[in-house]
Image 1 (cartoon, rainbow, N blue to C red):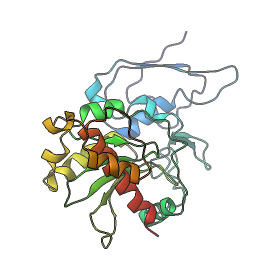
Image 2: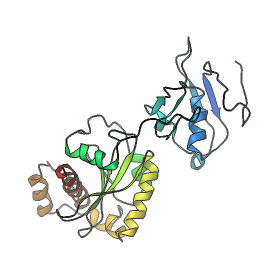
Image 3: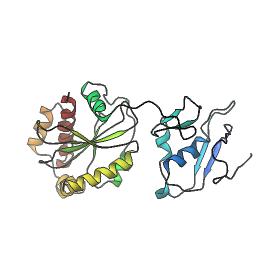
Length: 259
């Protein structure tokens, strides 16, 4: 075992692809630096099959969860370095990849059936536990949250043609177009932004996942609407769960209808 302790000593230009274990003892909130640190151990090398990552930092000082790097690394075509593909340029040589699709193109790809949620495997339960709002994860891969009967809903669209999640406001009324409010390659950060949007729409009461009315039984009207929307509500569905499913179905349908 040949250990190396490195804090701002072995920086740009240092290459050790044989590195097979990393002990993270230095907390950082920099996503760029964090990705570079992890990248030291993710480079291929003859006879190397894996890399052990031991994170010793405090949870609230982390810039990004290690799991968010899985399947989200890219290789620079100019210098061969690996980096998180949400970055605008290679941190090693400065190469800038071609421009990604804009928000309009991403929204259009939903309407054209480019995404059906079958590739989404993420589990958002930990994020839901930290959120105060009643977020719903549909089988289609989208996340949704109500803003009330007058303001529609918020939708978080997963990455399609680029690495970004998109926070979308789907307003009430067919004459009003959905609008992308923000985009971010870090879902947890985007959900924090969504909390701010919920406050801006004065929807904290109706969106609160702990609201007392959510535990009551679903009404016959809710169940009828769900069936009319093609859903199959399970027995014992609560009023809150039925409301979430209805909000999700209506909001996603609005996106699908958009051309």
